[in-house]
Length: 272
Ligand SMILES: [Zn+2]
Ligand SMILES: [Zn+2]
Image (cartoon, rainbow, N blue to C red; front, top):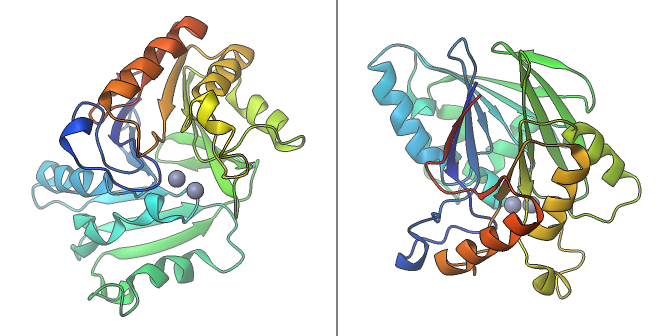
């Protein structure tokens, strides 16, 4: 299994010189299974460059992509209209999410309806399918076993535990710690992860004025990694105000609590 980060920022893209090292694109993670299937987690602005790479790799052959969405806040879907494989008639894109209540297809159509975007989602050329997944169930996709779980976030969000053979990656972004019911669920799903990708938007000081906003701190991420027995921790969903200098400091402080920690940066790749 190979993991690559295409977007690591939370809330809104932050393209500026001060963020060149860690990157300014919003959430997008690529997971390649041993059989070469491409699983994509979230469709923030980072998915645009991933789409371009997939088109280059395919060189005209059909592309089959699976996109798993944690939830529908802008920073997790805003890159979708610019995902080039969507516009190829030979391609197929399957969308997965937790239960939406409103319908996954309808929810995604909303961001491309007029007057928000010139191309209607119903008119994109790729073959599309929509799967709403039950939390806690195991879903087999592209040679990986994927288990979604509910997280504490305004309007809800799904985390994903992704397993190929003995290798486990946990993608847990957009949650706030301190929820009596959902904290134990997160801990359980994070157990023994080889890589735990974790919401760490705030410093502990910043968190005090952002309680209830649905995000956690790097300190909480290190505590979770420790408790869960994770091998590596990746800090994710960086706050828009955290420039490279701040991110380097956060990474350093987090490493004093959990040694094998990296703050995610665009292009970070891990092989399992
Ligand atoms: Zn977010
Ligand atoms: Zn969110």
